[in-house]
Image 1 (cartoon, one colour):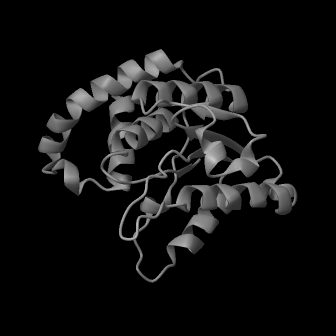
Image 2 (cartoon, helix red, strand yellow):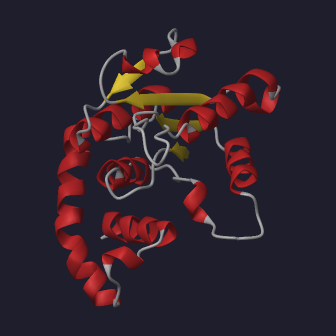
Length: 194
């Protein structure tokens, strides 16, 4: 499952909650952070991941102005467009692609990406529990897997995981800022297995 969202420190709790939900639900989370190869274009890597994933989650909530002059970052809408294009023009191998689109509040996206007004957009209000719940419900509905727990159950497990994470990292000799995306996936898988 392709995860298309911001990777900055402010968004990290939502990102980690969504990734935990994906792994806990029995799916493999994929994103641009999974491989760090300076010889490979990030956008080409993203296109490759999109080509390999049936499901995706696109959080288009991070459109704040930044820098001088102040401009928004539109990487997430761009990657959403690539995923939509793959479904539309990718032929039979991509016809079954499904996507969850998240934003913070209802209809805000219409101010900066109005062409997707016909899509079903879900809202998390910047809240991790809401993001987990929306993700779990969507995964259960689209995959039709009865093994995907409800959002409340996953949120409770995620809270336990987050509380135990400092001890886990300490035991591995890692500090939180040193954890890579691959490390995080392994930590989640180990926690779920135990």
